[in-house]
Length: 138
Image (cartoon, rainbow, N blue to C red; front, side, top):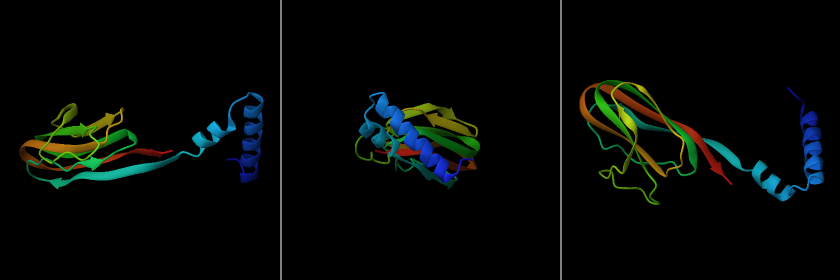
């Protein structure tokens, strides 16, 4: 691991090299200081019945990973929306991926604004759904 002074010196060398190459330091600085933060949210907690789910805002979060567990005998669908405002709970928008009848992961590699988990055909299980990803602020 490099010391702080080594990291600073490397950064100075990088800026000098970029300036020689004609690259805009303003553009590089803007990109370098974009903030990325982890987004985490529980979408279902010990769900033991059919549910429409609740829309969660995932604006500027991608890739986004959802882990669904506790499915014994039920179907879970990951639903997404690109609408600027939250859809109504009963509005299911677009399905991402296939119906889940066993525990697993769903990865969304495209940006959406809203996500939720819909449980149908519930017979048994205690279903949890947890999502995480990187939120970017420029």
